[in-house]
View 1 (cartoon, rainbow, N blue to C red):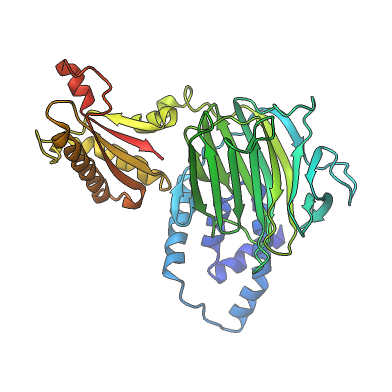
View 2 (cartoon, one colour):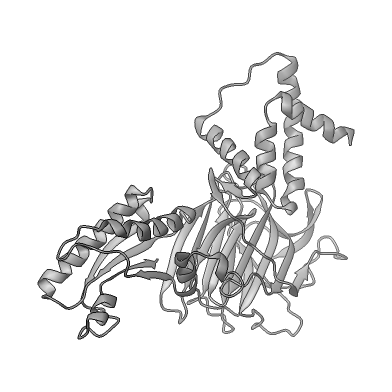
Length: 416
């Protein structure tokens, strides 16, 4: 107890308490011990600085801003990453399908609950924890041995969690990869998620396995280097989310359901990687029913269909000038995009069939561009928006009636 009191007292003297508490607030319970270990390594340096009368240098403006936001976010019960406030909505599944904490395993042996697919792995210790060690030199790939021995064990709703060690040494960066695939060992048409200390990259195929979503997320500043970190994934029928240290870094609304998965490392340099405490479970938060009342109309539509369609963005007749009453709907979309800064949208303008294509096609493009400009003025990053005019070519109702034509005059925000 005296040790912890001394630790926090010294951190207060060197000005480190706010950032340390912010970081602890950002990480989950599994990462707290790792953070405390890193903090302990800084204590002696801080004490020496105080005793020697050294002045603390000016903080980098960006780091100072991040610390301030972390402090505010901690008080609100939310996490932060790169200075952005992000709610953590991960809920682990309740029914365990596969779990391995390596209890009772022998050091140096291959872990008994796994199947080896490529190269070599063994049980080892890393920073005081039992872990699966991936040998350096080339890729190593393992997959869980599920009780019935089949490779069709992933249900419609599941969560996957594990801890992994991130090496921060220059030129020896850790690199992990997860492959989710079909029973025939076909990697095409499903998911690949890979990450290192700086970034996460993914390719996720939509249902049917023909169209895919690709993207990346920056992880620099979200990892505890040279220590343990936490990965979590949730899948609900078609909605895929990924979290690193409780910060959501992927949110794909329409993904193809896989049947099984592998974990492997990609070796760019001579290094060794570790994972521990793997847990695969059925269930999780119900995105579409129980939580529907907690969602805005934009959030609900995108979660269920991957797009938001509205007839409430209005223009002056024959022009691309937005009417004032359109701003309320545009504000809703802007709020969603600012809460999901990695989301990208195709903003589609649609018209009815009154008039010729020669008029409607450029008009719909101009209207889509006007919506993009309005969102940009609301603080949305224009990099995440692309205006596309569809004219009258994709009607959703009969153009022979006024009611049908009204439905066809619409704006669609399609997530990409």
